[in-house]
Amino acid sequence: MPTGPLVYRQRLLTRITHWVWAVSLFFLMLTGLQIFNAFPSLHIGMESGFDYDNAILQIGARETPDGLRGVTRVLGAEFDTTGILGVSDGEVRAFPAALTIPSKISLATGRVIHFFFAWVLVITLAVWLVASAVNGHLRQLIPTWADLKALPRDIADHARLRFHHGAEYGVLQKLAYASVLFVALPLMILTGLSMSPGFNAAAPWLLDLFGGRQTARTIHFLTMLALLGFFAVHMAMILLAGPLNEMRSILTGWYRTDGDKDARSDD
Amino acid sequence: MPVPMIDRRKLLLGSAALALSGCKVFDSATDRDSALRRLFASHEGLTQTAQRALIGDRLAPEFTEADIRQGQRPNGSVDPSGADYRQMAETGFADYRLTVSGLVDTPLSLSLADLTAMPSRTQITRHDCVEGWSCIAKWQGVPLGTVLTLAKPKLTARYAVFHCYDAIERSLSGEVFYYESIDLLDAYHAQTILAYAMNGAPLPVANGAPLRLRVERQLGYKMAKYVHTIELVDSFAGLGFGKGSYWADRGYEWYAGI
Image (cartoon, rainbow over all chains, first blue to last red):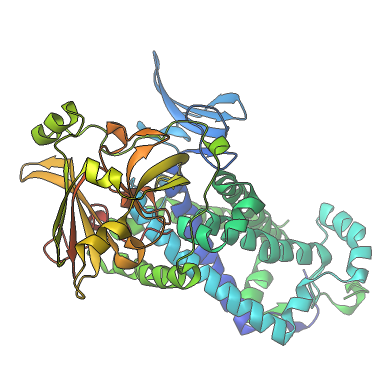
């Protein structure tokens, strides 16, 4: 455990936006799964193939001699996913009730909550981006040349579960946060907007960029999975690096750093 | 790692599982009169204002013949069963009349021949269902603006309401016929047409024969099928539950540009 001095690492705006995003992404994901359930397949192209097959993922149900089975087809390979995907609690639905908001089937409610938090996310992201550009926080997230040179060592340290507690983020941390904030979230917002027939009139080039509305929908879903992966690693890192110190940091801003003898030379 | 760490992890995992199964907490948002629902729905005006400011009268993307790779998937009502409609369908809609009424100086009653004799617009567009799927098809019809100009809307008219032949719901209190509405901004948009042909053939019954609306910058449920009357109004009071459309009265957005 670090024994060095406490440093003020996250300013108030960073902490507030962090938690607003956490809550927003929770709702966006679970209402997103509710919306997905209304048409539980993902396609490549401008439209969804009904008379031809351009699906890469389909979740459905099938009547068999053993009863109703949930079937998930990924890139042509079929899996029996009864109990989780396709059929859960004896009900035909792609994602189970425990993973959707609301728990019952209601596309209208899922959409209303999804778009509400989409606005919350977009507005707080914009405020944070402008403020962070001004107050210098953005620079803390972008890896420097020295950071990149330290990357192999940082990877090796993480693999050995040896974590550094510096006043500055480590390079893997910077890369992880930067890819969420500058790649994944903008991609989510742009692919989401690409699904809007109204917004298509404003920016038809976005459709060309993503390869059509249905491909945009597929990218939207896959980016959600990537964000879920980030969340899992984020939680694991907090638990492994000292959850109390990490939580104090994101709640109060104060973070206990390593003592002088084990501080990193590049921090 | 010391033992307490594992306990903490269990605690965290436990609370995560609680949070997930706690999704039922938000089920009250399905109640359209709840405060929670009203809070979440508060974005709808913002969405409409923002989109309108961005798109003005720009066109929805149009596609080429090569992009038409399948038939137009029918959804919702696909075969109205009313006696008046059935009789009309059997005679190829020779007796069909489109009524234009409400806040207009010149109420109209137009036959299918009247409509097809007017200048038409043909467009290959993508139909996006609120469920998430899309389908590309070619639509031909009379610009709604042309018909409205003939009817001369009064200055007080704000919305065009579409009354349809299909009973979307049957209950003890009777049948509910599909109704939908758009404001005059969308009504006069260049791509807003009353379509009577699809993919080079007369509009099939499953897709809304003899006449359906196309509002290309909004979702599929806005594009009323089996239209028999266009009524110009200044408010939605007296129409359904007052939200202006069958699906808006059931919790969906009235402005369906997203």
